Length: 330
Image (cartoon, rainbow, N blue to C red):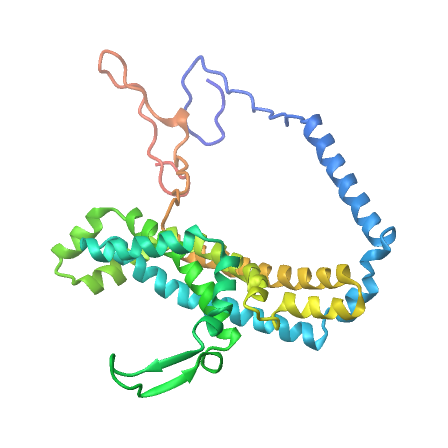
């Protein structure tokens, strides 16, 4: 019997196995491909920085923090936030309507989705920009009687408001399907268990269904938020020109250098998008708690050689000494 440092006995005739020497697998093709990618990226950056005067990096630095650009970025954030808030509220409402047993309510929700998902957002924004022309005044009063009051549509609905309405209604159609998919992803048994416990519809939805559905809703909603940030560049169709892209385009019309101003706008879009992506990551991690978490691998507290073996005839082999916590033997 060989010596055992741990003090436990080893079965006779069994030699201690040699330590496994793991040899790292080499991937020369993968390494060569990575080197080629790095060289291509380095050549592109060098060419962009020194061989393309059209980029005019001095002009980019000059207007990167220009007051008009910063103000335009502020308007872009406002358009994004206001539109997404309205879109989420409408999306939840339409998703519930789509799941309603009432055929009329379900049909209205379906027509809304069909209309706003079936037409381009740019066309919708052009239409909303023409609302003050189509409906020059808005009259309030009892039908078939004299009007109580009349408003001028152009004064009541400025272009900023029309841009928010156009973006929100288009996005609400997509948010409705995202919310509906999240609600359907929750097992039906959760709803039945909540009802069995005596919870009402509101408490069931807010405390049982929605918290579980959020892990499905948050990732696509974050993507839609980022997409909305970039879609605001289309509000020039309303026309609203005080957003980030509109201001950069106005400046380029004066300086006759569109490429540097496009780079300025792109840098701002990338900066805001990066911040939103970080926020999305932490939201996803928060609502994914307890999902797909594996327990740590349990390591044996007793060496394999110290465990006795029961023979075929039922007679027990050598009984190993009792091992106390800490590795001490009785």
